[in-house]
Length: 459
Image 1 (cartoon, one colour):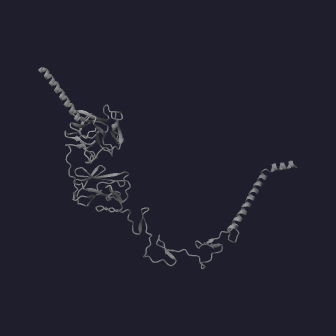
Image 2 (tube, rainbow, N blue to C red):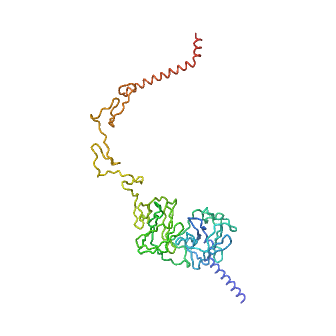
Image 3 (cartoon, rainbow, N blue to C red):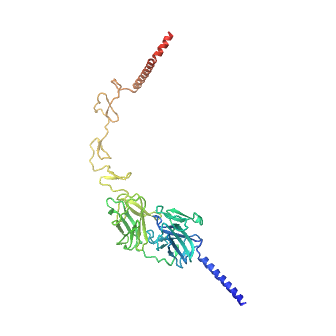
């Protein structure tokens, strides 16, 4: 009986351990829940190097205890890109990873960063591992048994998973200009790995004005910042980021005042064919503000911020009044030199033609031309004092000038309209008769022999 009881106890304990193990695995298993959604090894200027993983379950949160993100390169070497702590919990739909050394990895544009190595274009395998078990994987290029081709630098594409095609041959495809899911306002993870937010010393700085299309020298180019806060800002450590390069700022900006960074050690594209972006980066690497300027910049014309629209969006406009270091002034048209004014239809400066009341009055019989400000004679009326026109000329009642009289050949008088029509008809009739006569004569001459034979037969 003791042996039987011992056997039942052993079976019960085994079942209990097995059941508890099953329940534990069910609570922590990420299979069929967590997937790699997209990957880009950094060959797209729009997307940048990134890895996106997604929770497709109905669970509001997933425990990431014991979970790691691994990368196996085309040579078979395995790297641990990220290892979650036991207290880490995914509370959003997506997690966006950036490579720490990539230009796109500015704080506030990702959830987590990895630093062990960058992804390769020619091949690799990404894996999500939990408690040494494979949760999901994605491969590309020159690795064993991978059907997905490698990335090409000319394509600049992102490898994206279609979740409505899970388990099929069309599950993965390359997409152009893919935009990963990221919400900077809402955290997607509760993590003990993420340090507390640092104080942003340049957080109150804002882009205010730039001038890129210079007149004669690039030294005219400038970027203006405005301190919108209540305290002065120490700029040391902050920088301007332009075309993936950083340019240091230094000095102090008092509250409500402006700071100007001239392009002494770099050059802004004067009039880009597409949009150009400039970022303000804090001392801790965080993105403080961003400015985008577009094609259509004009020579010596600034691009400046003028308040906000009803939705709270900044309003930027071009102004012919550049004010580096001062409050922005909107000027729609260029300043014309003395003696000229703007033509609002063309935007060009034209000679001033408005009347000047200081000018002396024009002599009798003349008036001031509003276009030239010169004196011009009035059109004189016909009078008995006008000199008679010469023989064969008559007075034009519209201009009071003498004009030649239209006459018939040989006539010594003006030709009346009725007489002209009658004469024209007469000449036309005789012209027709003449043409017919010539035609008949030609026919008779051409067929004179035949006509002669006809007459001889009749005789």
